Amino acid sequence: MPLTQRNQPYPHWEFSDPASGDLLRVVPERGGLISGWRCGDREVVYLDLERFLDPAQSVRGGFPVLFPITGGLPDNKLPLPQGTFTLSQHGFARQLPWQMEPLADGRGVALELGDTPETLQAYPFQFLLRMEVRLAAGALEIGTTVSNRSTAPMPFSFGLHPYFNLSSLEGVRFEGLPAECLNHLTMEPASTAEQMDRLSQGIDLLVRPTGPVRLVDEAAGATLELQLSHPLDLVVLWTEPPRPMVCIEPWSGPRQALLSGDRRIELAPGASTEFHTRYALTRS
Image (tube, rainbow, N blue to C red; front, top):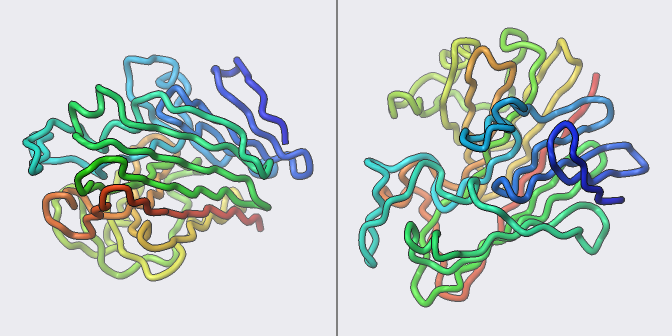
């Protein structure tokens, strides 16, 4: 499976599977961004190319990485025993350059991000993130290892913020969602069905499913299944009309988990933990 540098339609690295023709596109210098995934003849991942080409704007598309927090904090302030730190929404991993190398098994790429003087100003911990991204038959597999290289316990949350193409905001449905959700706009419990009725007007909600979550796009003849693994098993669903896309995001903890303690992860000095997620595409 060759790894090739491309300049069109934007600078990126392309990893291809000769057997299936599936493609993975990665932009390591833009937050370790998985910017594209073509499975069969379908471009699964949404990317706003015009916005992407403007480095002054945040990316709308691909698979932004959320670390060391998911969501935002009141006034962007994170109180810790070491002091109070300023940390913007979703953390800094999606904004920094990552290192990339092909995986030894020939199935994908590894992306790594470590602490820098800049990150230590916002988050006083030495860390290493390593993401291994693999193409599988009809699927994309992502395994992430978070390591604490500090001498103090390291609290964090981790998540992915992937954008997926839709044939239309009106013509899709979800399966595997629980009856109740948390409306991120009001931070109050809500009916999942009522929220999904507003899909084309814009939604932002968190659910705690007990199994896979499936996006069924009947017009495209495609079903995308998010296969979850604890502790990366909360799911945020988000749309931004009129963009023909939906974000199906696996998170380890809800917004403000580092403050509330709800599913807050704390790594001991020298410890590591792993996260796994898998997206599988089937065609009808």
